[in-house]
Image 1 (cartoon, one colour):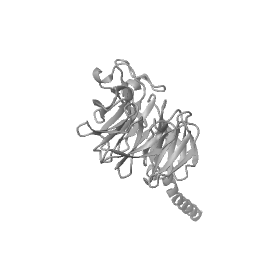
Image 2 (cartoon, rainbow, N blue to C red; image 1 turned 30 degrees about the vertical axis):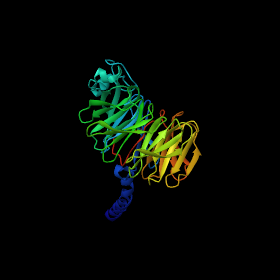
Image 3 (cartoon, rainbow, N blue to C red; image 1 turned 90 degrees about the vertical axis):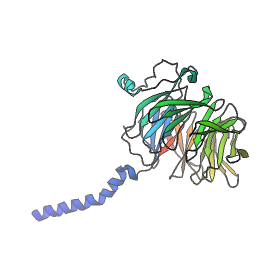
Image 4 (cartoon, one colour; image 1 turned 45 degrees about the horizontal axis):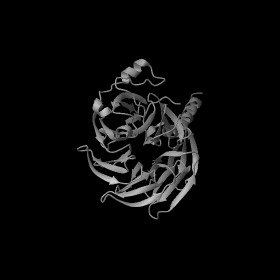
Length: 367
């Protein structure tokens, strides 16, 4: 009887050892893919890039449009497109108690001269806990956001005020506003953090900012209505969506010269660079299309994606591109090589500036 019990024990031990690697790979975040954060009107949806399935959500933000992440992957910076008068309390999102709302609200005063009479909100979100930890007042409604490569500052565009705001993420203090031009839209930074580029859709320009001094150092005249931006893989060229002309404009940064215009359809919006840096992807709202531009040949391949393809982001390590719709609450998972839609992800609202985080480690309520 004792021998038989030991045999059963050994068999069970072998079985457990055999399945242990499988259990570890399924539950250890270090072995999982990346997480894609999809901001919308009511919060942020989390998607696993390996399965392209929803894995959670973050509440506590209101009308979230801009979204960025710190280099260490610990903090999301979300911007609200809502504006309010100074002295007006920050709106309490549904599902959040008044006590938690007040505890998380630690806004600092923005000078009236810079606010244009209205205030906006940046939300700092702890990725591990999946919740808002701080709210910061900024001058005016926030369109898009960026975190500097050193993780020190958050920079946001404010279309109604003609400039960008700068917030110190360590202190949560608004430190300055920089005039960039009429209706600033999108912004990108060089990998070494030495320059930030801001498109101004109302003045046909892109401004270059030096974060060391927070001064505008150069202006690129693009014409039309510059919108979303992306840098080439070697960061020598800036690609600018020109909504007015229905094209993508190529600007060589050393010379500040426009060297190429690629057709992008009527009312182009989102833009992204392929993982290998060889192609540009651009969405057309009016044409319901997604185009891939081969940068070596200039050849453009276009596919219909209906309705209203909007924001784009490349998901590293997957060969996929995420494309949101401006008309319906969904995100398409698109193959970068073929432009074939592999999957559709249902969201909680219209998805705006998407962010990807590699190997996430978070504790969040599953949806």
